[in-house]
Amino acid sequence: MGGAVRAAWEAGWLPSDLHELARRKLAPLAVECLAAAVVLESTRYPVATLHPRWRADLAAISAVIGPDPMAPLLRHCAVASGVGRRAGLTVVLKVLALLGALPALEPLLPLPGACRHTHSEAGEVDQKALGRVRALLAKAEATEFPEEAEALSAKAQELMSRYSLHQAVADHELGRAPVAAARRLWIDSPYAGPKAVLVQAVATANRCRAVWTENLGFVTVVGSETDLKLVELLTTSLLVQANRAMLAAGRQIGGGGNTRTRSFRQSFLIAYASRIGERLDTTTATVTAQVEDSRLLPVLAARNRAVDEFTKRLFPGMVHRRVSVSNAAGWTAGRAAADLALFDVHRPIAG
Image 1 (tube, helix red, strand yellow):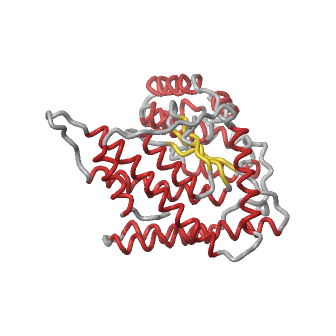
Image 2 (tube, rainbow, N blue to C red):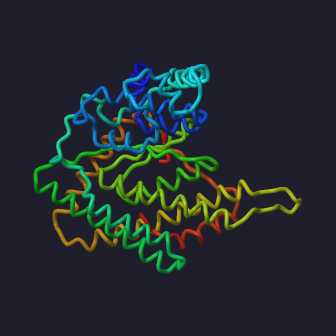
Image 3 (tube, rainbow, N blue to C red):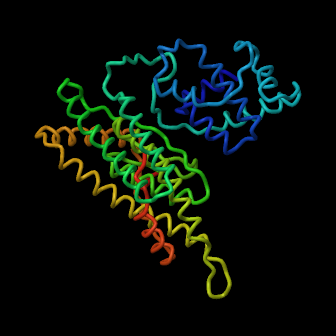
């Protein structure tokens, strides 16, 4: 199975991508088996030759590794899932079938064994700054008072945005050319399309581009590493808030007794995304205006060019598509809910 995993990597699939697809397509035992195969295959390469985000992917994947990491994969799957060899073989075959049918994706990271990363490179995000943002967001989500949560979340957005701007100028002073990166954010059903619109709104407000790959269910976000991290943090929080607000808005029944809940919720989420984008755009503009540095605008222009060029290189056939709503009540409710949302931390859409 190691060869099949390596082939998937060479086709552009990261460990997190494989895990997310397996979670959607396979039974839990098969998900564990694939995770084990990914981890075992990764041990063939020195840790120093794995990109930091690749290592983070591996750390996030929950697979039960047997006592001997070099044991045959079939035995490992049996240990991980608590089943016998026959059932383990069935699990392995299902995993191999999934791996064998994978389409090629755009390569986002160097393959294991090929990374020559150094800690002095541009693009690394200050973990202390991220820690402060996460702490603010955790407090925002824990409080029962909307006003307090909004203040905490807005502070987190402002803090990370300001850090990103100062980091851009600092990199310029050190002679570092703008570097664009990309990461995939997998979107859970239902209403994946409207949720992707929310991701795009967050990405655009934070100087990133978003490309929606509808047939697989993920959004590829392109930007600087700092901005990508902010988008990921904000998106995760806002998707939770949007879902909670959507469910709180309830169901909608038409005059003839027919349910219009689906159209209501789709319109709700699209309106929510639209209003969130407006709020984030305002916050970003305010923070940018407060940074008194004549070098900032040329630096941001250079960063935007790098992001646009990388996006076009990854997605030369990208097309743009407008989204529409069919339920006025859902649109109105979504806009109202977005005004209460807390700023914690394709088609654009494009595919």
